[in-house]
Image (cartoon, rainbow over all chains, first blue to last red; front, side, top):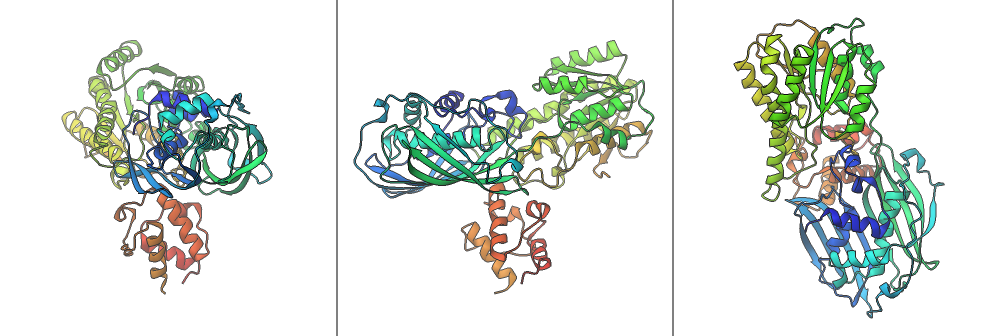
Amino acid sequence: MRFESSDLDLFSIASGDRNPLHRDRDYARRTPYGEPVVFGMLGAIACLGTSQVGPCRRLTSLACNFRAPLFTDTEYCVERAVDTVETFEARIVDGRRIVLDVEATFEPRTPTPDPRSVALEPRIPRTEARRLRLPDLAPSKSVRDEYAPSWSEVSALTERTGAHHTGIDLVDVGALLMLSYIVGMELPGERALFSAFRLDLDPDRPDTGERFGFDVQPAAVDARIGRATANVELTAAGRPFGVGELAAYVRDDVPPVDVSELRARLPEEPRLTGTRAFVVGGSRGLGASIVHALSLSGCDSVFAYEHSHDAAELVARTAPGPGSVVAVRGDAGDPEWCREAIEDIVTQDGGLDFLVCNACPSFGPLDVHPATIDRLLRHVSASLALTAVPIATCLDALAARRGTVAVISSLAVATPTKEWPHYVSGKRAIEGLVEVAARQRRDVAFLVVRPPKLVTDLMNTPLGRIGAIAPELIAAAIVARFAEDRQTEDPVELVDTFN
Amino acid sequence: MSLHDRLEAVFQDVFDDETIVLRDTTTASDIEDWDSLAHITLMYGIESHFGIQFTANEFAEFTNVGDLKQSLVDKGCR
């Protein structure tokens, strides 16, 4: 099973679910997923499309857990545990990791005319997703409206997913699209990570394309993990035909750099005046904090970013000073681009004192499995390149000023995270490179920084945020270390405690 | 039924695996299907079974089953 970006377009047009997590590449880059996520409901429908249950059966209930994100251009497998005329239980797996699971029940029915013949204009109440937060989801904030998907696209989607061969008819698919629309656009809308739903359908519901309606009532929130549930009633031509429960995580915003926190943690007098730094990956999160901490310390810095143009402009524009900040766009893992960027810095600005290697490709959970090994290797290679190329390119310039390389590794190197084989492997490869480079070049100082979980876009997941610390704390520690004239016996200094 | 046995039963139920045997040193690494979502389901299952509520930090992170048991004891579970 594989999803293309055209499938996301089709689903979005059919359902009216325009949540940017699935549609906007730049937006998705600012999430932990790094790229557009396949609509969970598209995965569920495609999973149902593998059922052997024919159109003489009718869907009566469906429960689904969206356990991990699905991505385009990735090969997934469907494992069918039960596939009878009454019950369908299956899951989509990535390697051995369960990404999505569904349980459906069916009853007998007589096949009926195709509702594509019903002339019904789409009715999508909202074209821009609401941006509700967890506290906005009080039980009193129910949402009720009429809805009609775009039936011709629903039909195309049903065929694309194979659902038209099964007991899932066009109206059922339309109802499922309505659920996706509700979560992605209405409650909670843009911040949603649809995590689960259960839907019980009336076996005697109309099987033509009537005007739908929905009534959604927030039920409960769990502020610990940002999870919200809601009860939903679906109607067709005003008559109820389905009830269920929806669950979603509600993503919170990652706060911008807190300059006052940096100021409080750094010496009052700028101690890096007259120095220059190159920061790889400075547009967001820890990198942005480091850039601003350098600026506060009087260091003039250039930072590289590849995609997050708006965020990079903001970081450069809001630099607190006195050190200047310039953003340059490019792939720091590309030797040619990196060489030209460093040449510009050294020739125009007169040298380089600090190199901070912070960039890391985005990543999600991964299994070590033949089906995923290409992705694992790609991540490790890209991760290593984003550090190895700048280091190799900058060493001579740094040596000329007895400069320092700071490499952002991770506490996960010492305490590996089970779901991140690619991330841990990449960071260990980076640390290995630094260990050797430091022995080759004693005229440059090397720091390996192992931060714990940080409140950044990368960790902005339901469990990821819990216990995560502010990146300003790490940024201030690194920059304060730059200002020290510390001689160490070890070729590489490990920085893994932060106060 | 001891607290350990009750906790083990919750694990077996959540992971649908009656062969799970808990030790105080058991961590997420020891149970194959213990991913992020399973962790949330597990925590909800434990809260429901023992009638307690974890704090956010407890919910997200405990070192091993021994720590989890200690947390339950601290909350008055037996």
